[in-house]
Amino acid sequence: MTIANRKYIGFALGAALALIVTAPLLLGSATNVNAAPLTADELFGGPGATGSEFAGEAGLGSADLVDTVSSIIRVALGFLGVIAVVIILLGGFKWMTSQGNDTKLKDAKNLIYAGIVGLVIVLMAYAIASFVITQITSVTSETPASGGSSS
Image (cartoon, rainbow, N blue to C red; front, top):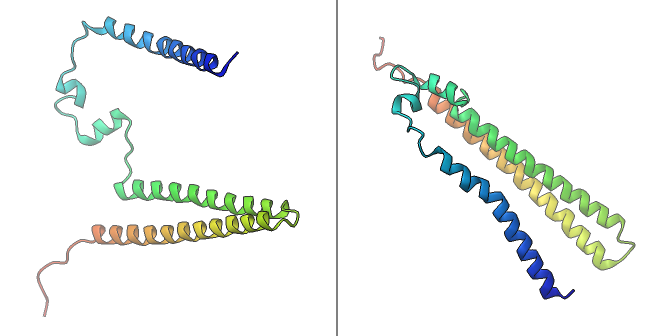
């Protein structure tokens, strides 16, 4: 079997798979043609629904926006920190298995250096993000002082 025949077989299998996957979606949409559209009251919980009731019905969280953003940043930076540590460990593994080969040793040192730089960047980003979020929280939660002065 030649390479060209393998490409055609792969293309035919891909097209068949795409047809199998999309056919039920295309055929299934034709059965819902007579469905009545939802009204605004049905979409948003009725005329007396509040925003928190709608959020609860929609399955949305009730956390503050700053808390949500800070938790997303923490998770993302934690994931990047794990990747940096894995890169450092990979560099150490390459160093141990270099068997005295100078090019492999140089590559391992470069990998460790890149992992350390990445880890420093992630830690600095965490510190900056933590500082900014703390400042935003303290500024937005303060109440303005009253205009009167006592003498």
